[in-house]
Length: 59
Image 1 (tube, helix red, strand yellow):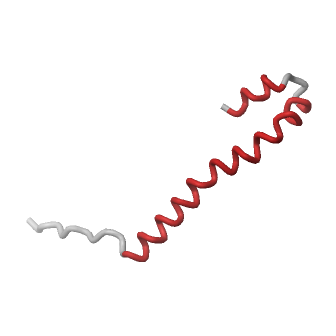
Image 2: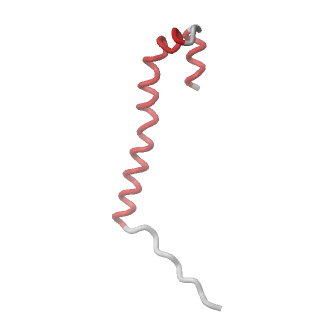
Image 3: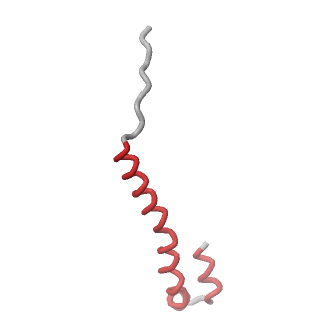
């Protein structure tokens, strides 16, 4: 039987790139919420409902 060689992990440069990409993706959620909240009154008006019912869509 042949033995399997352990595979090397990511290179240092690739690790940094992955960390930067994951950090950028993680930072998108707060920005999307910050853009969504000011639009709630308009959303409620467009849907012909109360602001409290429009707020349910943010959960």
